Image (tube, rainbow, N blue to C red; front, side, top):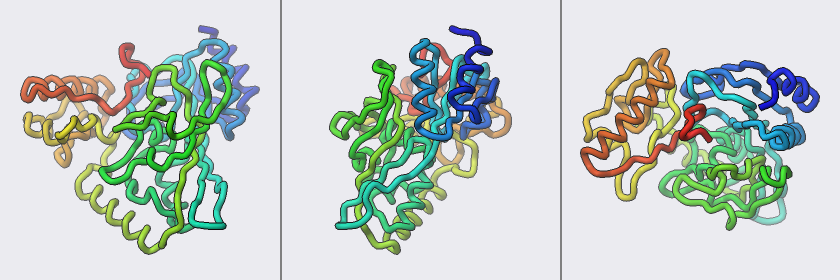
Length: 313
């Protein structure tokens, strides 16, 4: 890989106000865990983001793309190469002339901000996602959702950076491969989401607010949202609740170092102090082993791992 100093000089020409060297990713993840990135690039717009990815792609420099830092465990030694933090922005493509509304949202925008915008403008469709801690890019890639609503069901097209062609292109909904906590954007070397166009409709603000309030109340009552966590650690196996399986295996409340399986919901691992990535990783492995030995069910992690060689993505 090319030298870091030379890379920094080049990247400063692309994003002059957004270059940080040896930036600790613990400051950018909801678990508050993670060592330094060689270089973090925080572009102020899509032009700078695209130019950064073209630069690293042409030189085969490792590049990790970061949204709001949920669903992510970063190794204590950090990651090599570049971490690109996606910029936020919302743009209404069409608001008026009928019930159908298109909202283009850049990948770095938090889902919370999008929902606030929808409430203000009386736009319905994704209000049931209230309380999910994610950026739009991460939410689309993971097809974030609940039992009666997924964001993939409202995506019309995605603007993504093609790593092979080194240029942006549109990917339409039927090409996105949306499934349970999955999409084509999770594959190795998959296109990087830059923005997503959501299909929404006009609705009653009072009703939108009521649904959002109810969903937030349920999440606050059942999930440890006041604690530092990465969100749900494992996907729910077909016909089962991952949290219930972990609890039945006797692991609810188990602690390794400062990593704790939440006493409120067993599918959450929280940072109860100064937990290391190794503490969390040990708990993940312990949970998978215990559930397999108890029930013969393999839990698949939902959380992404950076800096761990066999799963780095």
